[in-house]
Image (cartoon, rainbow over all chains, first blue to last red; front, side, top):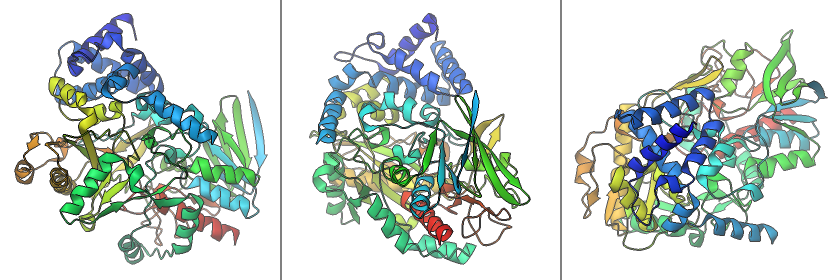
Length: 105
Length: 478
């Protein structure tokens, strides 16, 4: 994504998530970097369509199927941030540490 | 770039619920087996318990594969050693007797799978989820169902040493889930099988009516497997494309058709108590009160990012639900679908067409109505269902859900069990493989994955697929 797309992604994500304390704004999370990783795993056509979807919603298009897609992706990538998940009560590091102990036994 | 040649008795394409057991059992019976897997190995120590970050690593197309149709339905498939069993919930059901009866009557498929069920269940450690591992989310649903006098119980799963990490669908970090890549592939390799990862099967060479070899591409060239028996087990969405590209299996016109997907969706319940829906086995309880009507309720839950993606509502309303994530439970509705879709290749890409049937939309409504009653019986303050136009339910009132008429496009669904695209049957005019899973008219080429399962099972299919694969191995090695 370009720098402009990243800014747009953060803006759209903030609109979808509507964060208030203790939830941080999207720019203070790793949502954008994670979205780029998801784009790299997607088929090229899908990746182009997803980038375009965020641009269109950022430009004000509000068609429901498009909005549903963008909302779902924004939620996934925002709430997957480690700090956000810990704020909500989930600690992935603790799950992984316990699993390592189990494997070692 | 180089090309490697491997000589084997059998070449197995795919390492999921079908390919892995047939490979292991044939090798253990004295065959020389070469296994081709497009994905890579994923070890438990590499799992991060973060769904968002695991999806691009473990899922085909980063988990973004979806149907074209009304409504679009996400179809997550695993990619790697173990196939989709790497990312399933581990739930185990034998093929329901009513389904086996229908196959016998309608398709001439007389399958006695009891010995194979026992064999695969022993191999993958199937046992009932202990209540203490189920997590509060699932136990509340069980309590609610019990209060209403409904048929419900703890599910059977394939796990050994599970501690309830809560992320079965995103890579088990303890290695407790006994998926195909954890059990069958190591067995095959210990017995001497060769596994080639990163190898995508392209050509199945058939000469003078007999299969001769398989060509696969790899990152550094290619591999040629010379074998007199080829077992295609790339899954119900990929097997048809591979066969079609090679001019195989298309005579009946059924290849790639007859796709059932077992659509699923989830509702949420807000409780006064702490539920921590990510704690415990996500799919640990079932309610089969409406199973005869093709409706199963099964647990589904996970970390906040997974929940956020599928929680209905938007903006501040969604955020407030997420801020209450520790008190929010969730549970799934799965529908044995009557609609049939298709899969084909367009410009080298897999395209899945599927329209949800209005009768199946009504099944979702009925499932959610029952689930809402259960949630309220368990003490929920609010219930949110993913049906457009249905408001948040409060005070035990399910009337808005009972009164509404749900159209397919108003449902948010996913699907996890694609089946039927190379279906088995006695009649070559209406099926792709025969009752022994051999392609009609092509000796030596077999199919052993979900594509041979002729109809929706109404339950999770991994035991059915593994049992069919075990039966194939027994017949071939007899």
